[in-house]
Amino acid sequence: MSQVTEYSEKVMDHFMNPRNVGEIEDADGVGTVGNAVCGDIMRMYLDIDENGVITDAKFKTFGCGAAVATSSMATELVRGKTVQEALQVTNKAVAEALDGLPKVKIHCSLLAEQAIHAALWDYAQKNGIVIEGLKPPVNDIEETEEYYNM
Ligand code: FES
Image (cartoon, rainbow, N blue to C red; front, side):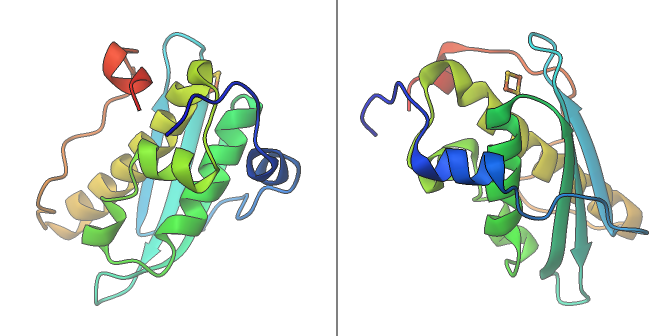
């Protein structure tokens, strides 16, 4: 992806009109993650049916505009996907779906990815299942070069 320095129209749209804000009562999976550097927090709620398909996704965030936009897009992307497919909704996929993010905001999309993974982890724990490729959630996110080299 080419270097992005400004917010795309899609980022602005999802920031101004975030999709799926709120919480799901008795959600099948809930995950909360935070970034120790900026202090922002994101919580993701997932409803998952007996076939392992995500039927609903909602979020709340105490975060920046990009955190709002990325979590909004992340909820849109995981809805209707299987648990396994949802693992492919990476920070890169979220940023690409938003037509890119400024470099300094890439970590916000990482928070969205981590929040999805944390909610999936919670779902797996509650149901005693193992989701292949899913790692335990991290609450403090390190910012490394890797995240900036999209
Ligand atoms: Fe912290 Fe965006 S600045 S999530």
